[in-house]
Image (cartoon, rainbow, N blue to C red; front, side):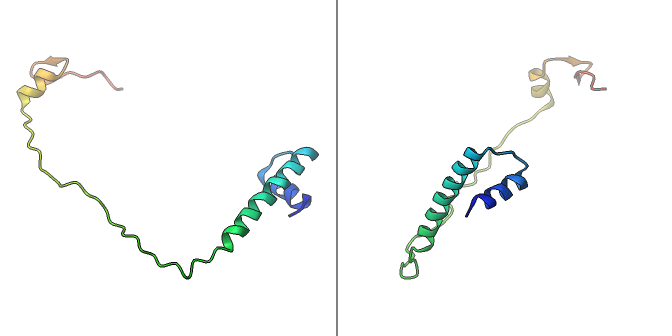
Length: 90
């Protein structure tokens, strides 16, 4: 990676960078790419996967709820002539 690559990335991102910022980004990118190269070199072919993945579900229990008109009317803040009164929307 070189300064030209950083300038190209800045142009694609539509940002302006000063010369010092370009150098800083170049160093950061080289560090990141070096880390990725280390990860690529790790040998995983010989590793045996011995994990056991499974979902943990709670038991589904039916909850019996009682909804009666009277119970709802009691809990509603404004009732008029047996109807629930709400604010005008339009």
